[in-house]
Length: 348
View: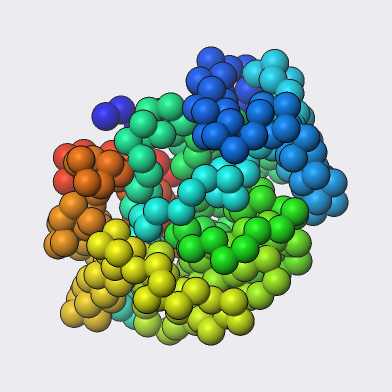
């Protein structure tokens, strides 16, 4: 699989315009996939009417993101509401346990660098229809970010030139609210200059859904488990690992016994595999070992490295290891056991 990188620069609107123009056909294809999902419950017209409820929350939360979304809409010649709808993927799509993330602090690594990363696991058809790629975005001040994302979406996960990194996992949908979509919050976090501002961007959002973000810089690692009205913070001076279950004691947390199945139980296995790896390799973690754990097949096919099979039609559509202190993003465009990692610098 090839590494697709698009670089855009300028004002938020100009960056969005270039994104929309370049990925116009891919955005149309992704929207067709998206409408096929939402039309199971509502018509296309009803879907747009529903999306309009989120618009003021996005615009109040981040005017610069609003401008970029307008640019994507103009460049792709699609409706503004349709571009916002793509950013509601997490709130509209059904939950299936997938993706595994990690972060380890400098004392646990060979070269005394923070390492973080994840697998990005999605249905095999979405891995085709969403046209995932890497978006390098450079603003007017020369500040840059590199993000794994879908056509028409500003950011799915990534790293910026201030060393702020965001990886994350889906969580069971305890509840939804009309508010700021998860993917919009991701984009705002990757606009921040410090770890404190990155965390603040999560706290101040009137959140629409549920997620667990792993936010790092060159010194610190945090995990933020959030629902629309609740946030729990996890901090470690050693390492963090996570899959797709709640660790915090949220007031409306689902009883694990009610959601467990072979698929749901895989989150426990993947989480523990990651924690075991980080614990056993503490002090000797390096790039190669991080790539190795992302290739792990224990509990296949519900493993860290995913492959589409009849009983589990999900694939690791991308995987990466990030060195925030060096501005380096090592990216595998598909299952890492079958694809090599390519180094992509935040600033080319």
